[in-house]
Image 1 (cartoon, rainbow over the protein chains, first blue to last red):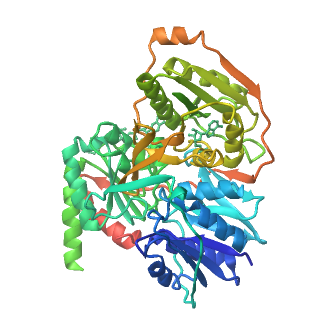
Image 2: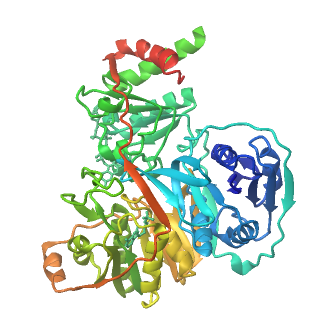
Image 3: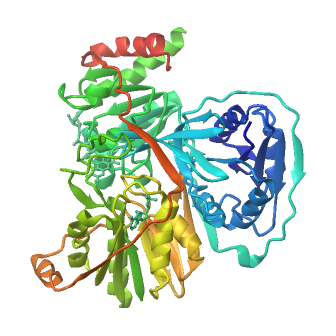
Length: 324
Length: 250
Ligand SMILES: Cc1cc2nc3c(=O)[nH]c(=O)nc-3n(C[C@H](O)[C@H](O)[C@H](O)COP(=O)(O)OP(=O)(O)OC[C@H]3O[C@@H](n4cnc5c(N)ncnc54)[C@H](O)[C@@H]3O)c2cc1C
Ligand SMILES: Nc1ncnc2c1ncn2[C@@H]1O[C@H](COP(=O)(O)O)[C@@H](O)[C@H]1O
């Protein structure tokens, strides 16, 4: 039995998919021990009530008027206090860009070196063994921490969600926060009227490379993505050519993704791109060059011009949907 | 302005990585080394800041003896000084040990801002900068895609899970560089010649006891060989069938 504490990522009370994944993993390694979740910020109580489904026996909530960005480093003090008080063996975080500064600040406060972005985790005789990918995915390292607590973050879209139903006890944490605890101020400026899912959590990703020919042709990929409920990604060449923004670059110097289906359109398959897509369940490649390296790792390939194949694919998918 | 840049020398992204016979480290012989790509964006950001406000850019790097040659490449780009803390076998040292080493050193340097990379491409922790900032008790802003100084404050814009944010904090602070923060320059021959006069200062250091232990390294499982469904639009119906019936992802 390991005493496990989980930090919950949520947006105004709505928990993210990766939070459910993290709780499921936490429940698994905790065994019979009660699982404690921690939720900060506005909407915390709302989020807390959704956590029972994933096995949280206890939820500690904390809100403060100063803590407008509850997932930022500004939350380090109360979270450090909770961990010091609770003395868990393991603290789990979802591995997301939002939480990273907080995870680091808490780790520094506690003098713990975290194991981040894990793709596998196992409780072996009350010791955690964690696997993570290093050297741009060319190597998988397994690690063990010599410290208590062990702080671990989990890569999104890798772990299975397992539902449990438990009775959750909600407790409020009392902590006096001051304006001086707020080190960085964040102004959100746009969600770009987003209708597509986030790249890191998307089940399907449609990605384009230089073979798309020009920025305008990405409309084809957007149409395909919208039909499939998918996110749109891009290779670095496309980002460097300013056809697409940096935030959708996939690969070693972009995002690492693990969707169920990755459709690579006009992407050659350079090692740095593959680093970001290796954990995808199924990879489809559409490329006019039969010798393109992407075909070596793709499960299914079509040799052809993306400008013809993608519209044909949309049509075929529509047909399939109508007949089903 | 005193500007510090933390730079790691890493295996170049194209290099083939082989696991060493001990099964826990990589074979460092015959690998091509390079400045961690994100640290190049960080260095360029520091040099641009110096060009705007004056001051000095100092590069600090923890790495083994072999790193020296690559650290030197920061000088023609515009770093005034480079400090090499020589720590053998530190490539996979845990992030907190590296951050502590850097913090101990940086406490002896006056600074207004520290730039790090968002992540290294070898250890891939994406943590050292954030830990370092916390150890030094200064604000940290990670993954900056734009950066400016407004009076005594740093103003950064960044993308967080699809949302654009503008984040501000007081100086001194630490900022980590996302790709695209800057376009690293290619130094001219003249700059390369002039930089030959600059020295890199090096000193052996000893890392503390490791907080994490690497149990083993493996190559990721090969993806099963795929198949070419066909050529041209004629292959599309079969692809849709395979995705639906075989892969079951639609
Ligand atoms: C340090 C470093 C980090 C890097 N990080 C990344 C990263 O994070 N992500 C990344 O993607 N890259 C990264 N790269 C770059 C990488 O090496 C490749 O240059 C890049 O991935 C190539 O992008 P691409 O496949 O879109 O373009 P190309 O390599 O130019 O490939 C275009 C492909 O499109 C095909 N094509 C052309 N026309 C058509 C058509 N009409 N229909 C169908 N197919 C067509 C071609 O056959 C070709 O295979 C990095 C490089 C370095 C050195
Ligand atoms: N050995 C090192 N020497 C100097 N700076 C480092 C070292 N390791 C990491 N850094 C800095 O911390 C950033 C993040 O590293 P990491 O946490 O390993 O991904 C890097 O981009 C560097 O700026």
